[in-house]
Image 1 (spheres, each protein chain N blue to C red):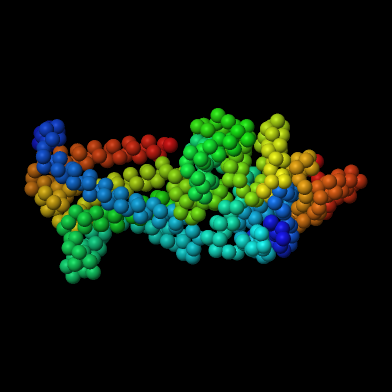
Image 2 (cartoon, each protein chain N blue to C red; image 1 turned 30 degrees about the vertical axis):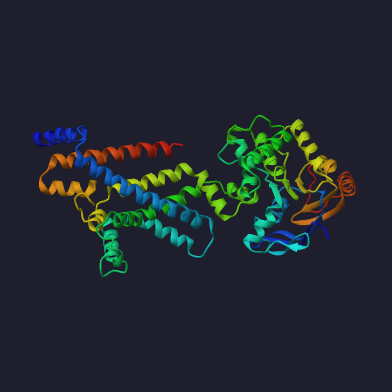
Length: 246
Length: 228
């Protein structure tokens, strides 16, 4: 039984079908790379897994139990096992420390001092020690992205959903974040990483799923899938509807 | 013109010398309106949050109705609350007519549409990504509402100040529910009406100056909050 299983998942908005028959599974300690062009449905898939939206059909199954289509109470309980970093993270109108401790606070974890200690450790992990009292909304896009990552990892989630987590970062910061994500591999956390960056996917992901126009067109070990995609690109063959951006 | 000028001088004298009756009426006005706004805010701000964040049939019509009630005539509210609290009314046994508590209830009803409606408007100004972020981090519904209200705190405080201004300056509820009883339910607005009808223009003007002063302080605070 996989930790997370996505079964026959579909999502439509009106007549527009965004996701079509998605089937995926992720184990704890595994990083699944989700690659595909803009508008292929990566962000929608992550939002569905995070239970921010309900699927039109199909199921999201966490440790053998369907969590989609459940009561709000059950969805909150399932969501509290996950954390998500959005492509364009927003900060609460407060300082950095309050932003990072927010998730711990709403989940009722620990005392204030304990939460702050964890938040400081998370900030150190993303290279932002000393930023605790800074107004979170005055920071650069890259810094906000790293705070969003700290806000997620401080929760020690069983499932970490990352939507282009290094898109706004300079190469050095991106590399530091990649190392951090690498350190999560093999642990208790399952990671789904949506990215455009093939190199990042190759370096980090154990498995890769290629999403094109809402459909998974390739799924398997990262070397096998990405190697095939590269060969396809150089030989002139293309996955239908998917112009490789790299 | 001279009469008005003398009236203003006398009014200033009453204020500067802290005339006991003027001060007592002012204190009672502030207490009743502050209590009404405080209690209304406790109910109306979360209610505004619920209406804004939940999806339900008829939501748009409800919001339109609430906004239509912003200009609710104070005498109509006064009449409604009078009928409810009068001896033959459903809450007559509580004996709240012609009491400060009755006035608080009337003012709460009067300002509730403003507080609910302006809270909804304030929350609409918050990015929907904030809501998603809070939910994603594990917040339940009440925590999401609290977070969004906190994000819109300056606009929500402005709504409360507008409500306070409306409660303090209304005369219909205060007159019909309070009855303008000396040393008990007489407040700034009802007292101004009474003193003017009795020809005591100095006292009337003193109370008017105080009311204008409080309104000006409220408006200054309001522009400060709205500027943030």
